[in-house]
Amino acid sequence: MFASVVKQDGKHSSARCWMCGTPVEGRWALDDRTGLLTWRSWQDAATQALARMSGPRQGALLFIDLNRFKVINDRYGHLAGDMVLAAVADVLRSATRHGDLIGRYGGDEFVVLLTRCDVTDAREVAQRIAKGIRALVVAVTTVNGVAAAHVAGLSASIGMALTDAAPALGELVLAADAALLASKEDGRQAEACAVGSRRGDDR
Image (cartoon, rainbow, N blue to C red; front, side, top):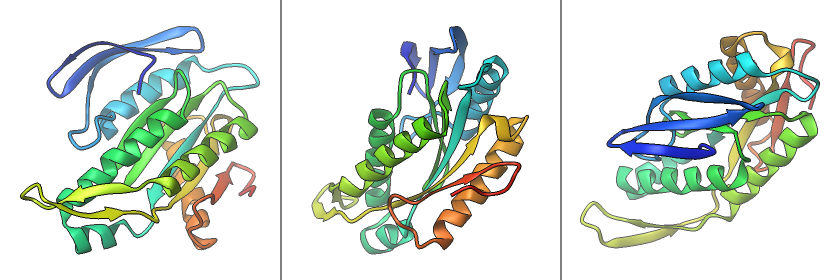
């Protein structure tokens, strides 16, 4: 999640994330199910990071939504769904880079702020995420801890917005969310990644 975790205490973590040569510090709340930043903590950290970005290779926001996640909850139960979310969080950690910020937006949606990258770099990260999610095979259990099944065949839709497309975090999130919707309209392919910008969608 961060470049380094200094101290963890319960649901919070004091951490330092090196962004563009400048540390972003704070006491962040972590999501119970995934260990990622909560939406509110991610917003705080991302706002700090955006304020420090500069240069031609600034950054990008990825908005990630698992496809047909409700089917897992309906078929295997919410405990199984939580296990899948935790596995997806591990994919996000392994697919992202030093200094990137990962958070859980809510439900089966995640956000990743990529630092010091251009659209090519961001696409590569998005493809690694999509490939990692597609390769997941998650052993899920019932509420009694009994093995129930292996969940596979997962996929995700991903929307992307470059930081130069929106001056503020709220607008950046909206642009990435709009790109995510475009990605879903393209057929919910695992590798699908639409790019939003002020000049319109560039896919």
